Amino acid sequence: MKKEDIYLYDWQRILFGDLPGEFYLELVLRVSFVFILLICSMRAMGKRMAAQLSRNEMAALVSLAAAIGLPIQSPDRGMLPAMVVALVVVLIQRFIALRAYRNQQTEEHAQGNISLLIEAGVIDKKEMLKVRLTEDRLMAQLRSHGIRHLGEVKRLFLEVDGGFTMIKADHPLPGLSVLPAFDRDFLNRQAKREEMVCCNCGQLGPGQSDIVCSNCGQNNFTRAIC
Image: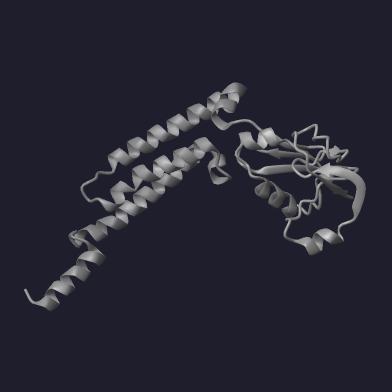
């Protein structure tokens, strides 16, 4: 075989593989079947699959994708196994959804609980550690809602789907600024109060050198923002 023929064969193998040409016609049918199967499976699992996914729904979707992808790429794989896997995933998901509807504890075990991260302008550091949330991520979320300091926040919840729900305070208290420390120019423009606030959690305190924060136990205070 000539050298040019070897290069041509390598490129054909890379692009088309070692499959017969008839498989590409069959591939159109396989992809159409798998696409319809996936749409029908998601439809059977409810409208939540079209919204932000929970843990169970994400696991179900990944399982479907892993199972039904094989018949598309492998001509020796039949379509029936993909149908069986899709049926099992749909039944499991619908069973969990039904149990969660009837039993609140089942939903909590499957989906998790709502976490209260900020209450009356004070960060719950223990809860943040529990949900593996960093302070930078928390402050970024507050800034995205137009919050300048923690005193403007009455409640901040971390929902079971990973989203944040914030309730602003009707009468804001003095609080810790949510601006990043490197933005000194913007920080200096914020109006300062006489009250001192904990730099770690936002708890109002005396700010004396021999007194620690009553909420987090740290001894690092700064002037609050109004």
